[in-house]
Amino acid sequence: MLALRSEAQSTARHRPATRRPGALPARPPGAGMDLRELRAYVEGDDPRRIDPSATARTGIPHIRSFHEDRDDTTLLIADFRAPMLWGTGTALRSVRAGLALARLGWQAVMRGGNVGALALTEAGIGAIAAGQGDRQMAAIARMFQGEHDLALTRPEPAGLGLAALAGRAARMVPPGSRLHLATEAQAITEADAPALARLARGRRLTISLIVDPAESAPPAKALAVTDGAGFRLGRLRALDLAGDLARLRALGATVEQVLP
Image 1 (cartoon, rainbow, N blue to C red):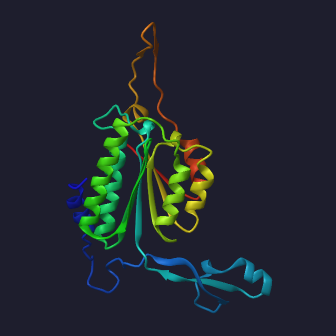
Image 2 (cartoon, rainbow, N blue to C red):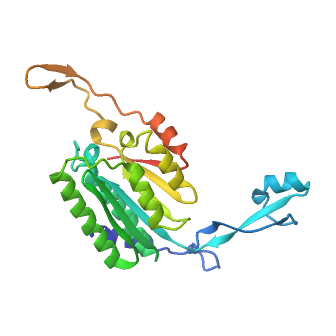
Image 3 (cartoon, rainbow, N blue to C red):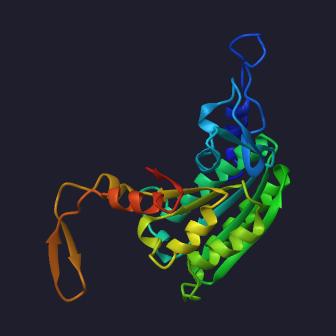
């Protein structure tokens, strides 16, 4: 995780294509979530900002504008519960989740943002409040490592799910923050859905589904499965996440697959 700093540093350097103003991306991400004003439309306004309710109520086109969102806070959320503690490739699915989150954390540090982290294991929740700089990311890497070691040595369930994690995350970061949750599709149950939907309101929630090599490209030959007394032969099918992607996007989150 610490070695990913150099990778993020190389991608953070932007070279302008020209010397004219506007060649470099601006740091503020744009309009935020807090309403600044609601006023009548004038020529030159962006028609995409027209407010339907005010326009219908007054009969005159009105536009809605928001305060500029300058806060850059990223919360990294790692799921280290039992469904993530396996893998058929070069690393456990949980390890790949930690690396994917660390890469995003270093990118946030390089652009001067705040970064915090949460880790969910069968034993409980580990957390680090948002902060800045290399030292902050080093602390997050140590926390992820410690919580992952704990997950491997203490498999007893504590009864905590993503719903409890979502409530903790909402208290840790302000509205408008970026949240990145690394997990797998079946680990998000129907009981978790309402809490994740509330978390996505006013925040940019991205759910990264960690896909194992056996799920994306299963072996073609038949495999033997045994329970110690007998065995059967079976073939694995490629994982179809279409239904899960639609279910999670309906919560207001951005969903992506992290392939091997």
